[in-house]
Image (cartoon, rainbow, N blue to C red; front, side, top):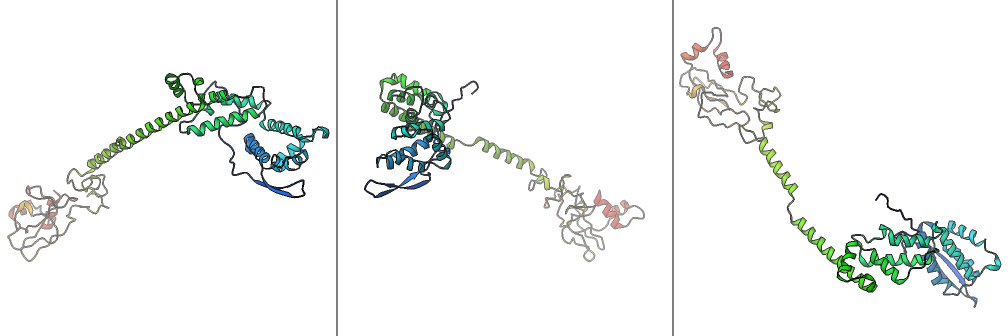
Length: 376
Protein backbone atom coordinates (compact mmCIF):
# COMPACT_ATOMS: atom_id res chain seq x y z
CA UNK A 1 0.00 0.00 0.00
CA UNK A 2 1.44 3.33 -0.99
CA UNK A 3 2.49 5.60 1.87
CA UNK A 4 2.63 2.76 4.42
CA UNK A 5 5.66 2.55 6.69
CA UNK A 6 7.98 -0.37 6.10
CA UNK A 7 8.99 -1.93 9.43
CA UNK A 8 12.17 -4.00 9.42
CA UNK A 9 12.05 -6.56 12.19
CA UNK A 10 15.04 -8.47 13.59
CA UNK A 11 12.72 -11.48 13.87
CA UNK A 12 10.06 -12.07 11.16
CA UNK A 13 6.60 -13.46 11.81
CA UNK A 14 7.30 -16.44 9.56
CA UNK A 15 9.54 -19.01 11.23
CA UNK A 16 12.89 -19.19 9.39
CA UNK A 17 14.40 -22.08 11.32
CA UNK A 18 13.46 -25.67 11.98
CA UNK A 19 14.42 -27.05 15.36
CA UNK A 20 15.10 -30.48 13.91
CA UNK A 21 17.49 -29.36 11.16
CA UNK A 22 20.41 -27.94 13.16
CA UNK A 23 23.84 -29.54 12.78
CA UNK A 24 25.13 -31.29 15.88
CA UNK A 25 28.55 -30.89 17.53
CA UNK A 26 29.58 -33.41 20.22
CA UNK A 27 31.58 -32.16 23.20
CA UNK A 28 33.10 -33.71 26.32
CA UNK A 29 32.65 -31.91 29.64
CA UNK A 30 35.23 -32.60 32.34
CA UNK A 31 33.88 -32.90 35.89
CA UNK A 32 35.56 -32.16 39.20
CA UNK A 33 35.85 -35.86 40.12
CA UNK A 34 37.93 -36.55 37.01
CA UNK A 35 35.09 -38.05 34.94
CA UNK A 36 33.47 -36.48 31.93
CA UNK A 37 30.14 -36.29 30.19
CA UNK A 38 29.38 -36.25 26.49
CA UNK A 39 26.82 -33.83 25.15
CA UNK A 40 25.42 -32.94 21.71
CA UNK A 41 25.27 -29.21 20.97
CA UNK A 42 23.19 -27.60 18.22
CA UNK A 43 25.32 -25.42 15.93
CA UNK A 44 24.05 -21.98 14.94
CA UNK A 45 24.77 -20.10 11.70
CA UNK A 46 23.81 -16.60 10.61
CA UNK A 47 21.06 -17.85 8.25
CA UNK A 48 19.11 -19.03 11.33
CA UNK A 49 18.67 -15.44 12.52
CA UNK A 50 18.34 -14.14 16.06
CA UNK A 51 15.53 -16.53 16.90
CA UNK A 52 17.78 -19.48 16.01
CA UNK A 53 20.68 -18.02 17.99
CA UNK A 54 18.57 -17.68 21.13
CA UNK A 55 17.18 -21.18 20.61
CA UNK A 56 20.66 -22.72 20.41
CA UNK A 57 21.85 -20.66 23.36
CA UNK A 58 18.95 -21.78 25.54
CA UNK A 59 19.55 -25.41 24.58
CA UNK A 60 23.26 -25.03 25.40
CA UNK A 61 22.53 -23.60 28.83
CA UNK A 62 19.94 -26.26 29.62
CA UNK A 63 21.99 -29.30 28.61
CA UNK A 64 25.48 -28.05 29.46
CA UNK A 65 26.18 -24.75 31.25
CA UNK A 66 23.42 -24.73 33.85
CA UNK A 67 23.37 -28.50 34.32
CA UNK A 68 27.08 -28.73 35.09
CA UNK A 69 27.42 -25.26 36.66
CA UNK A 70 29.89 -23.85 34.17
CA UNK A 71 32.47 -21.34 35.31
CA UNK A 72 33.92 -18.77 32.89
CA UNK A 73 36.64 -21.13 31.68
CA UNK A 74 34.03 -23.75 30.82
CA UNK A 75 32.08 -21.11 28.90
CA UNK A 76 35.19 -20.07 27.01
CA UNK A 77 36.00 -23.69 26.16
CA UNK A 78 32.61 -25.05 25.10
CA UNK A 79 30.50 -22.09 23.97
CA UNK A 80 32.29 -21.69 20.60
CA UNK A 81 31.21 -25.26 19.75
CA UNK A 82 27.70 -23.84 19.43
CA UNK A 83 28.77 -21.53 16.57
CA UNK A 84 29.76 -22.25 12.99
CA UNK A 85 33.14 -21.05 11.74
CA UNK A 86 32.08 -17.53 10.72
CA UNK A 87 30.01 -16.94 13.86
CA UNK A 88 32.84 -18.28 16.03
CA UNK A 89 35.27 -15.85 14.43
CA UNK A 90 32.94 -12.92 15.18
CA UNK A 91 32.47 -14.07 18.79
CA UNK A 92 36.18 -14.50 19.45
CA UNK A 93 36.81 -11.00 18.07
CA UNK A 94 34.20 -9.58 20.47
CA UNK A 95 35.35 -11.54 23.54
CA UNK A 96 38.98 -10.59 22.92
CA UNK A 97 38.11 -6.96 23.66
CA UNK A 98 37.22 -7.82 27.28
CA UNK A 99 40.17 -7.50 29.68
CA UNK A 100 41.14 -10.72 31.41
CA UNK A 101 40.53 -9.21 34.84
CA UNK A 102 36.90 -8.46 33.96
CA UNK A 103 36.06 -11.86 32.58
CA UNK A 104 33.50 -13.79 34.59
CA UNK A 105 30.19 -15.61 33.93
CA UNK A 106 28.06 -12.48 34.23
CA UNK A 107 30.33 -10.55 31.85
CA UNK A 108 30.25 -13.50 29.47
CA UNK A 109 26.43 -13.42 29.38
CA UNK A 110 26.46 -9.63 28.95
CA UNK A 111 28.81 -9.96 25.97
CA UNK A 112 26.51 -12.59 24.48
CA UNK A 113 23.61 -10.08 24.64
CA UNK A 114 25.90 -7.62 22.86
CA UNK A 115 26.65 -10.30 20.27
CA UNK A 116 22.91 -10.76 19.67
CA UNK A 117 22.52 -7.01 19.07
CA UNK A 118 25.37 -7.08 16.53
CA UNK A 119 23.73 -9.99 14.72
CA UNK A 120 20.37 -8.14 14.58
CA UNK A 121 21.87 -5.23 12.64
CA UNK A 122 19.99 -2.70 14.79
CA UNK A 123 21.04 -0.58 17.75
CA UNK A 124 17.68 -1.18 19.48
CA UNK A 125 16.26 -4.46 18.17
CA UNK A 126 13.64 -4.60 20.95
CA UNK A 127 12.09 -1.33 19.81
CA UNK A 128 11.97 -2.53 16.22
CA UNK A 129 10.41 -5.87 17.10
CA UNK A 130 7.70 -4.39 19.37
CA UNK A 131 6.73 -1.90 16.68
CA UNK A 132 6.65 -4.75 14.19
CA UNK A 133 4.35 -6.83 16.40
CA UNK A 134 1.92 -3.99 17.12
CA UNK A 135 1.80 -2.22 13.74
CA UNK A 136 2.89 -4.51 10.91
CA UNK A 137 0.26 -6.24 8.78
CA UNK A 138 2.58 -9.27 8.64
CA UNK A 139 1.64 -10.02 12.24
CA UNK A 140 -2.10 -10.08 11.51
CA UNK A 141 -3.78 -13.46 11.55
CA UNK A 142 -4.08 -14.85 8.05
CA UNK A 143 -7.43 -16.08 6.79
CA UNK A 144 -6.41 -19.74 6.88
CA UNK A 145 -4.14 -19.54 9.96
CA UNK A 146 -5.17 -21.56 12.98
CA UNK A 147 -6.01 -19.43 16.02
CA UNK A 148 -3.83 -21.28 18.55
CA UNK A 149 -0.84 -21.41 16.22
CA UNK A 150 -1.13 -17.68 15.50
CA UNK A 151 -1.43 -16.80 19.19
CA UNK A 152 1.62 -18.92 19.99
CA UNK A 153 3.65 -17.07 17.38
CA UNK A 154 2.67 -13.63 18.70
CA UNK A 155 3.57 -14.64 22.26
CA UNK A 156 6.94 -15.99 21.06
CA UNK A 157 7.77 -12.71 19.30
CA UNK A 158 6.84 -10.71 22.39
CA UNK A 159 9.05 -12.85 24.64
CA UNK A 160 11.95 -12.55 22.20
CA UNK A 161 11.50 -8.77 22.17
CA UNK A 162 11.86 -8.68 25.95
CA UNK A 163 15.26 -10.40 25.64
CA UNK A 164 16.68 -7.89 23.17
CA UNK A 165 18.39 -4.59 23.81
CA UNK A 166 16.28 -1.44 23.43
CA UNK A 167 14.87 1.70 24.96
CA UNK A 168 11.25 0.54 25.05
CA UNK A 169 10.23 -1.13 28.33
CA UNK A 170 9.62 -4.86 28.33
CA UNK A 171 6.13 -5.91 27.30
CA UNK A 172 3.88 -6.83 30.21
CA UNK A 173 1.38 -9.72 30.17
CA UNK A 174 -1.49 -7.27 29.61
CA UNK A 175 0.37 -5.69 26.70
CA UNK A 176 0.99 -9.11 25.19
CA UNK A 177 -2.73 -9.94 25.54
CA UNK A 178 -3.65 -6.67 23.86
CA UNK A 179 -1.18 -7.40 21.04
CA UNK A 180 -2.88 -10.77 20.56
CA UNK A 181 -6.33 -9.17 20.42
CA UNK A 182 -5.24 -6.51 17.92
CA UNK A 183 -3.64 -9.11 15.64
CA UNK A 184 -7.03 -10.61 14.74
CA UNK A 185 -9.24 -9.28 11.91
CA UNK A 186 -10.76 -5.89 12.69
CA UNK A 187 -14.36 -7.00 12.08
CA UNK A 188 -13.83 -9.80 14.62
CA UNK A 189 -12.55 -7.23 17.10
CA UNK A 190 -15.59 -5.02 16.44
CA UNK A 191 -17.99 -7.91 17.03
CA UNK A 192 -16.19 -8.77 20.26
CA UNK A 193 -16.58 -5.21 21.56
CA UNK A 194 -20.22 -5.13 20.45
CA UNK A 195 -21.23 -8.37 22.18
CA UNK A 196 -18.70 -8.60 25.04
CA UNK A 197 -17.29 -5.16 25.74
CA UNK A 198 -13.74 -3.90 26.22
CA UNK A 199 -11.07 -6.54 25.70
CA UNK A 200 -9.19 -5.38 28.81
CA UNK A 201 -12.05 -6.72 30.93
CA UNK A 202 -11.42 -10.29 29.77
CA UNK A 203 -8.62 -12.77 30.29
CA UNK A 204 -6.36 -13.90 27.48
CA UNK A 205 -7.95 -17.34 27.40
CA UNK A 206 -11.47 -15.85 27.12
CA UNK A 207 -10.37 -13.71 24.18
CA UNK A 208 -8.69 -16.65 22.45
CA UNK A 209 -11.77 -18.85 23.02
CA UNK A 210 -13.99 -16.22 21.39
CA UNK A 211 -11.76 -16.04 18.32
CA UNK A 212 -11.67 -19.86 18.09
CA UNK A 213 -15.46 -19.79 17.77
CA UNK A 214 -15.27 -17.08 15.10
CA UNK A 215 -12.78 -19.17 13.12
CA UNK A 216 -15.05 -22.23 13.37
CA UNK A 217 -18.03 -20.21 12.06
CA UNK A 218 -15.92 -18.82 9.21
CA UNK A 219 -14.74 -22.30 8.19
CA UNK A 220 -18.32 -23.64 8.29
CA UNK A 221 -19.60 -20.82 6.07
CA UNK A 222 -16.80 -21.36 3.58
CA UNK A 223 -17.54 -25.09 3.44
CA UNK A 224 -21.22 -24.38 2.72
CA UNK A 225 -20.32 -21.93 -0.06
CA UNK A 226 -17.93 -24.45 -1.52
CA UNK A 227 -20.62 -27.14 -1.56
CA UNK A 228 -23.07 -24.78 -3.28
CA UNK A 229 -20.51 -23.98 -5.97
CA UNK A 230 -19.95 -27.69 -6.58
CA UNK A 231 -23.70 -28.41 -6.77
CA UNK A 232 -24.36 -25.47 -9.09
CA UNK A 233 -24.16 -26.41 -12.80
CA UNK A 234 -21.29 -24.98 -14.70
CA UNK A 235 -22.87 -22.35 -16.95
CA UNK A 236 -19.72 -21.88 -18.97
CA UNK A 237 -19.49 -25.61 -19.65
CA UNK A 238 -23.18 -25.81 -20.53
CA UNK A 239 -22.76 -22.89 -22.92
CA UNK A 240 -19.82 -24.60 -24.60
CA UNK A 241 -21.83 -27.78 -25.08
CA UNK A 242 -24.69 -25.82 -26.65
CA UNK A 243 -22.24 -24.01 -28.90
CA UNK A 244 -20.69 -27.32 -30.02
CA UNK A 245 -24.12 -28.81 -30.73
CA UNK A 246 -25.05 -25.72 -32.72
CA UNK A 247 -21.84 -25.94 -34.75
CA UNK A 248 -22.45 -29.62 -35.44
CA UNK A 249 -25.99 -28.86 -36.53
CA UNK A 250 -24.85 -26.05 -38.79
CA UNK A 251 -22.22 -28.32 -40.40
CA UNK A 252 -24.74 -30.99 -41.40
CA UNK A 253 -25.28 -31.28 -45.15
CA UNK A 254 -28.39 -29.29 -46.07
CA UNK A 255 -29.04 -31.50 -49.11
CA UNK A 256 -28.71 -35.00 -47.71
CA UNK A 257 -28.56 -34.59 -43.93
CA UNK A 258 -26.46 -37.70 -43.37
CA UNK A 259 -22.94 -36.31 -43.54
CA UNK A 260 -21.12 -33.04 -42.86
CA UNK A 261 -21.57 -30.28 -45.41
CA UNK A 262 -17.79 -29.90 -45.48
CA UNK A 263 -17.54 -33.41 -46.98
CA UNK A 264 -20.41 -33.20 -49.44
CA UNK A 265 -19.64 -33.59 -53.15
CA UNK A 266 -21.98 -30.67 -53.88
CA UNK A 267 -19.97 -28.27 -51.73
CA UNK A 268 -17.52 -26.30 -53.95
CA UNK A 269 -15.21 -25.85 -50.94
CA UNK A 270 -15.13 -29.53 -50.08
CA UNK A 271 -12.26 -31.82 -51.08
CA UNK A 272 -14.98 -34.20 -52.32
CA UNK A 273 -16.50 -31.64 -54.73
CA UNK A 274 -17.52 -33.52 -57.88
CA UNK A 275 -15.80 -31.01 -60.19
CA UNK A 276 -12.49 -31.39 -58.40
CA UNK A 277 -10.26 -33.80 -60.39
CA UNK A 278 -8.74 -35.17 -57.16
CA UNK A 279 -12.17 -35.90 -55.69
CA UNK A 280 -13.29 -39.56 -55.55
CA UNK A 281 -16.62 -38.29 -56.93
CA UNK A 282 -15.17 -36.46 -59.96
CA UNK A 283 -17.76 -36.78 -62.76
CA UNK A 284 -16.30 -35.24 -65.90
CA UNK A 285 -19.60 -35.71 -67.72
CA UNK A 286 -19.99 -39.44 -67.02
CA UNK A 287 -21.37 -41.52 -64.21
CA UNK A 288 -18.58 -42.49 -61.76
CA UNK A 289 -20.73 -44.96 -59.98
CA UNK A 290 -20.68 -47.62 -62.65
CA UNK A 291 -20.83 -48.38 -66.33
CA UNK A 292 -23.79 -49.47 -68.49
CA UNK A 293 -23.42 -52.35 -70.80
CA UNK A 294 -25.84 -53.93 -73.25
CA UNK A 295 -26.80 -57.47 -72.62
CA UNK A 296 -27.71 -59.20 -75.81
CA UNK A 297 -30.08 -57.09 -77.79
CA UNK A 298 -32.22 -55.84 -74.87
CA UNK A 299 -29.42 -54.34 -72.83
CA UNK A 300 -29.57 -54.42 -69.02
CA UNK A 301 -27.68 -52.03 -66.68
CA UNK A 302 -24.67 -53.55 -65.03
CA UNK A 303 -23.42 -52.28 -61.70
CA UNK A 304 -24.67 -48.91 -60.52
CA UNK A 305 -25.96 -46.43 -63.08
CA UNK A 306 -28.69 -43.90 -63.73
CA UNK A 307 -32.27 -44.56 -64.63
CA UNK A 308 -33.41 -44.71 -68.23
CA UNK A 309 -34.34 -41.54 -69.98
CA UNK A 310 -37.89 -40.35 -69.23
CA UNK A 311 -38.44 -43.42 -67.00
CA UNK A 312 -39.02 -45.59 -70.11
CA UNK A 313 -38.22 -49.27 -70.12
CA UNK A 314 -36.20 -50.61 -73.01
CA UNK A 315 -38.18 -53.07 -75.03
CA UNK A 316 -36.57 -52.76 -78.46
CA UNK A 317 -33.85 -55.00 -79.73
CA UNK A 318 -30.38 -53.90 -80.54
CA UNK A 319 -30.78 -50.58 -78.68
CA UNK A 320 -27.90 -49.08 -76.74
CA UNK A 321 -28.56 -48.95 -73.04
CA UNK A 322 -27.74 -45.46 -71.82
CA UNK A 323 -28.03 -44.11 -68.31
CA UNK A 324 -27.70 -40.67 -66.79
CA UNK A 325 -26.80 -40.00 -63.23
CA UNK A 326 -29.05 -36.97 -63.12
CA UNK A 327 -32.60 -37.37 -64.29
CA UNK A 328 -34.37 -34.06 -64.54
CA UNK A 329 -37.55 -35.76 -65.80
CA UNK A 330 -37.79 -38.33 -63.04
CA UNK A 331 -39.95 -37.03 -60.20
CA UNK A 332 -40.30 -40.30 -58.37
CA UNK A 333 -36.66 -41.27 -57.88
CA UNK A 334 -35.37 -41.98 -54.39
CA UNK A 335 -31.88 -40.72 -53.56
CA UNK A 336 -29.69 -43.66 -52.59
CA UNK A 337 -26.28 -42.11 -53.06
CA UNK A 338 -25.90 -39.29 -50.55
CA UNK A 339 -22.56 -38.04 -51.81
CA UNK A 340 -23.35 -38.05 -55.52
CA UNK A 341 -26.84 -36.79 -55.06
CA UNK A 342 -27.84 -39.00 -58.01
CA UNK A 343 -30.28 -41.86 -58.62
CA UNK A 344 -29.71 -45.54 -58.54
CA UNK A 345 -30.42 -47.04 -61.92
CA UNK A 346 -32.45 -50.22 -61.96
CA UNK A 347 -34.52 -50.08 -65.17
CA UNK A 348 -33.87 -51.61 -68.51
CA UNK A 349 -32.57 -49.61 -71.44
CA UNK A 350 -34.98 -48.65 -74.12
CA UNK A 351 -34.78 -48.85 -77.86
CA UNK A 352 -33.69 -45.81 -79.75
CA UNK A 353 -36.68 -43.91 -81.06
CA UNK A 354 -37.21 -41.48 -83.87
CA UNK A 355 -37.10 -38.63 -81.38
CA UNK A 356 -33.62 -39.68 -80.36
CA UNK A 357 -32.52 -39.81 -83.96
CA UNK A 358 -33.91 -36.39 -84.62
CA UNK A 359 -32.04 -34.94 -81.68
CA UNK A 360 -28.80 -36.38 -82.96
CA UNK A 361 -26.81 -33.86 -84.92
CA UNK A 362 -25.39 -34.77 -88.32
CA UNK A 363 -22.09 -36.56 -88.13
CA UNK A 364 -22.58 -37.47 -84.45
CA UNK A 365 -22.69 -41.09 -83.31
CA UNK A 366 -25.40 -42.44 -81.08
CA UNK A 367 -22.99 -42.85 -78.16
CA UNK A 368 -21.75 -39.26 -78.43
CA UNK A 369 -25.32 -38.08 -78.57
CA UNK A 370 -26.13 -39.92 -75.33
CA UNK A 371 -23.08 -38.45 -73.58
CA UNK A 372 -24.22 -34.96 -74.61
CA UNK A 373 -27.65 -35.64 -73.22
CA UNK A 374 -26.09 -36.82 -69.95
CA UNK A 375 -24.27 -33.52 -69.63
CA UNK A 376 -27.54 -31.59 -70.19
